[in-house]
Length: 400
Image 1 (tube, one colour):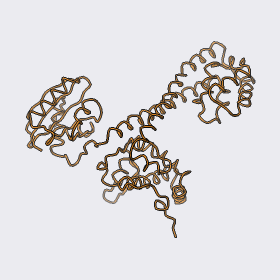
Image 2 (cartoon, rainbow, N blue to C red; image 1 turned 45 degrees about the vertical axis):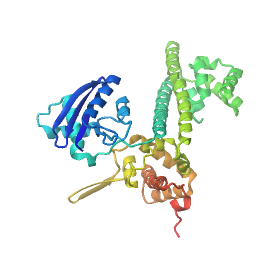
Image 3 (cartoon, rainbow, N blue to C red; image 1 turned 90 degrees about the horizontal axis):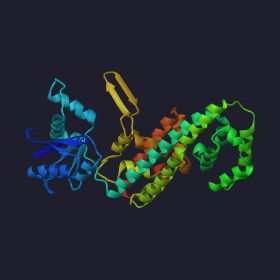
């Protein structure tokens, strides 16, 4: 490459440095994080030979934002360099440990000048795949936020209203259930819950869409609320009830999970890869969100497995050799991978048999799931590469 670009990203401005193939600084500037700044950057690149045929590659410490989106409009390669990696490269340029934003931009430009083959450009995913990624990650964040609020509410109820927890502890969804949230909003303290008549409990459950065992559950909840039990003093109990009512922003979190889930499912099913992925047991949109649809991103199944943290890592030095799990990985993909492997146990006899075989050889639960996830990632890579569907006998052949 004759010219390479490094951009030190910040919230309000960005420092830009252009170097030639020998490392000589050709130009540098500071641009604002607005349309005028982006135009100034594109004009600067054009002055130094940037075109649709010969785009200047760019190194930057982020893969998100409007600046990256602007630079990606075309065949340009964008290298998202990890900030920790960039800090290690900085030490190659001096021992004084000095640091500046223009200097960091120069370091980034030299990173891809000297070690471009060691860094991977951002994948060329389609617009639909990028939209699925946004929605799936937002839905995943909403699920985590909902669980955090549920944990806070559960911890609070244990201190003054354990009977309510007991009423819903065996119900699917627990405190996130619509009927649980509605009843707690009306009666956030044991004193108020004890005054609720049976007909009102039944009516509230029906309004949330329940159809089965309404009378029995309403009667059980009433009995639990009215039985003798330890209580906080009235003023403290009332204060805790107000705190519980404040934590019922859980309603908005539950609605966000449902709305984002529907939007994610709709976008996912519109993607051409959805039919292949849905042929696998237990898979969902989050897998597509994290691996994308750029087939050049993972040249081998091993690369995908390492990215997901499913493949083991080996440390060998002298007489010592250690094989263990990866800690540097895509945490979102690794998280959903375990859920995918666990869900496949009930949807695939072969997956279940593989899991049980690993357990009998000494693997503990998470090890066996990680091994199953590793195997199924290889199968998914093959199916996506060859445009074929999951086939149970081929994926998990029965030993003769």
